[in-house]
Image 1 (cartoon, rainbow, N blue to C red):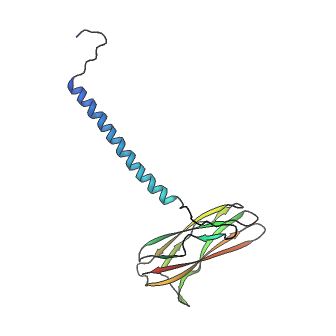
Image 2: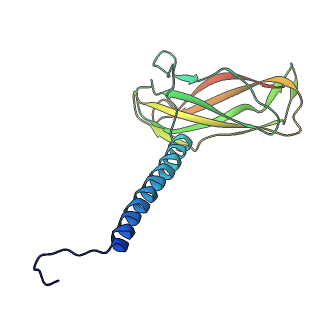
Image 3: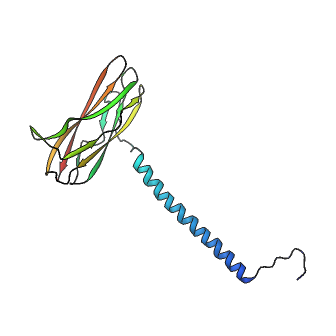
Length: 173
């Protein structure tokens, strides 16, 4: 054919074009779904949780929950928050569990748990700082309820150090 402006496509070319567009759409949909799932998991892993009752000036250190039941060999993320109610910036916020070994009963200390604390950090005046502790229960842990005292030490320029504490009850079934 010798017509100007005519568009000639064979049936095979049209079928291949339709298949290519369909495959492109399916591929893009798959990628969007996979990246959406991965993105949600990353946000959950690195993002802090919304604390229902965050720390306030009157109650500056709050644990999200006061107790947990954790099976042997499992981990538990304990979220907390600290409100800087001091009259100056906190230069270093350090965390410990007191004693380093949680207590079970009156005088029995236990090594059934490992508690990982966040890195020291600064907190500005009247700022709320979200915190997370990782509680790991050993596979050899004994079935019992123990109490762990979480201590947060705030260091400032003029006031020196201020200590905040909260107890947490940990049950291994």
